[in-house]
Amino acid sequence: MKTVIPQGTPKGSGHYVPGVISNGMLYISGQLPVDPETGLMPGGGVGAHAKRALANVERILLTAGLSRENVVQCRVYIPDVAYWDEVNGVYAEFFGTHKPARVVVPSRNLHGGALVEIEAIAEMEAD
Image (cartoon, rainbow, N blue to C red; front, side, top):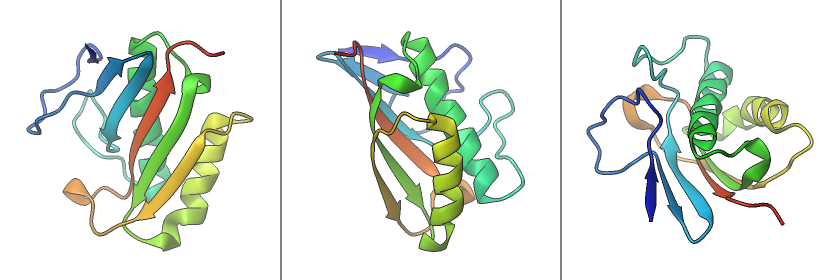
């Protein structure tokens, strides 16, 4: 296994790394909508949170030499199913014509008041 940690990633308090490569797959830990440079979450609601969380996923992909098109699955956590449509719109804009497998999980409150958390799995080499 090989860890993937983008340069400048702040040290979190949790016992995990942003990404792990194993057997040709990149596993990306849940990404909150926290700006890695400022440590702050964006204002603007769930759409802004979804954009930032996806940007954080992409940051890890790029560090591993991958792109959005390598993503095979995402799990999207939201604190209320009422956010589904807006998050789905941001997600569709981010991925464009590429459609990874996905689940949206309405959950309870997310860490730090986040409105979105996204984890992903990507393949290292497309068939």
